[in-house]
Image (cartoon, rainbow, N blue to C red; front, side, top):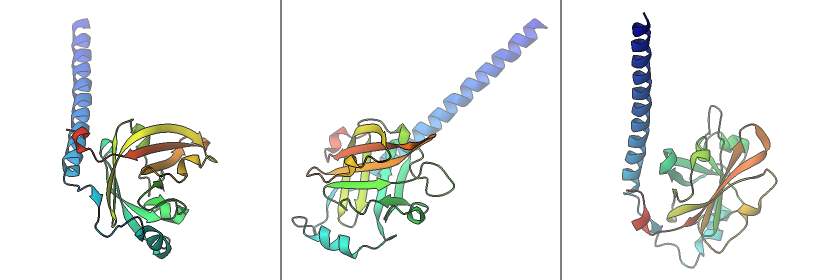
Length: 199
């Protein structure tokens, strides 16, 4: 009887280990696939941009809910997520929202999204982002590649990370589960050196 129970437990442990390894392998394979597709992204400005003169004009023309680009974060399997102008709740239900007070391309681009719910939860895995992960921001002006340098829990009233910068950055903000007054802030700096990209 004891021998049968031990065998049953052993088989159960082996089954659990096999399932965990399989899930991990599938997740890693998906990350590999996204990173392979990222290799096809051409990083750089489009020819139309000259001395940032196009950006203020474009900012005036863009209206709420207009699509301004897409966001890809390979490490959390976020791929070509739509970015819309404004951070109104109705906008965030459809895509990632762009803080209208921040840059569209050069400078500091500020984005927000939900991390839970039925729709618009594009940042549900943002908490899994690590320092040195890659972020790709694709717009009609061109594509920027950023490397994550900051991962902080901030107060909901702290907008300092969304301030204007000379350095090209992207700032991602979402809620913190169970902490209404807190926000998760991820900030990345532009880096076009593809030699350091994921292999």
